[in-house]
Length: 542
Image (tube, rainbow, N blue to C red; front, side, top):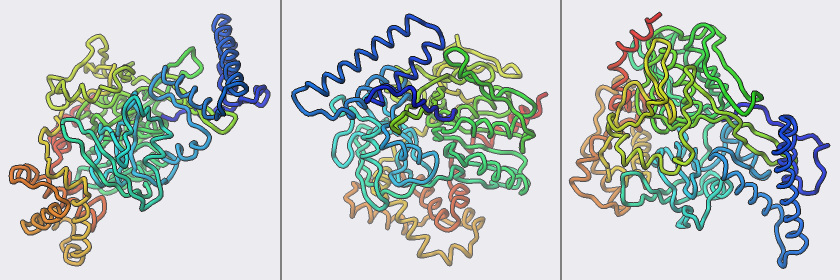
């Protein structure tokens, strides 16, 4: 999460040829001096001197030639592993690529990822990107890239390696082998790299005469502008109630989350505050504008892929009893990173504080659970059964109107909706080869004139996926040697028909068509519709 402007080191701090090491050490020394901690200053000075001496001995006397710069980068990365999973060092050659994901377009497979110990986890596929198209999901583990093992202690994946493996020119292909929770068999996906879109509002539409729907996929530089325009447009169309979908939104800029929450909260109420070492990085963000939707029923959708900035929005609206939260427990990332420019052009993204919701909740989950959290949620049954959701009763807090909420590991929804327990084996196989999307796009193109005459409302109400269409899909699967059984197909049929219809609608009417179809069978969204009476009561409280 980006919160502060980059901190630049002064030229006077540079005294040795090993610029990266000194720039970091200089910042630490300055901090220690400011706090007057003589003991820590001595430890840091001694440690820095030791590291400098070892590095110089290696450079001057080691028997073989050594890439000193690579050695420095490696030592920094290993040092940061002792901190939290979100503090990272970015070499100069990777800084520009690193920023592209939040600042603008880039080319690759389109995922937000995290490395927990020795495994690459998909936090969320970026909406509109190639990974979403082939069916990658939040929580997937990347085991192989082009048959090369990328997981395990012998590989030790890092951010730089992941970028090398996954990013590439538009049109190039990469094969991923995935371990998916709940499935014993490894899954293989063939992905064609593409330009990853920088927009963050996937959809903004009226679902009926009074219900608005906004899907936000991430919090980047343009999110608040996009969101405000979408919200204003829906109001002009007569929106009286809103569903804000933050599912699988991995976060991003903290200030954009604050601005978004401000559109729903009246007065000068607290939205989020941060607390770090001392008071240097302590901040407090409050509502300060007259928002576009401060009254009216509001429901926010979250799941295990909702993280960081998404949790700020959900937490603030829940704590102030402004919205009902529906879905499953969010990811649990409550840390703020500050980008620090280093003297050679590299960057340190240092965790400087924790953020807290208005009631005082920290939603940060324990660092040591990062590499097993999703597996534990699965095996413990938390994704499927509300009674299995674990809460820490010692971390209970009260909302504005006295409801009990809990901290210490994500935002718990007010209303739980389980993950679908069916495996959909045949459908997953079709998605691995991108056959569902390919068929839908071809069908939309070949029948564009006829479908367009139906208009979207007519398509949603009357179009049915025929048995002939399903037979054509099955034939495509046979050509890829996808094993067909009647049982597997019967289990996948209903969802396959829905996905085909939604993707055909996208091909003709873009995102509006897709979501108008897909949300009709979306269990979390349908549960939200049933709860608008409760949301109305919440919105009416004084």
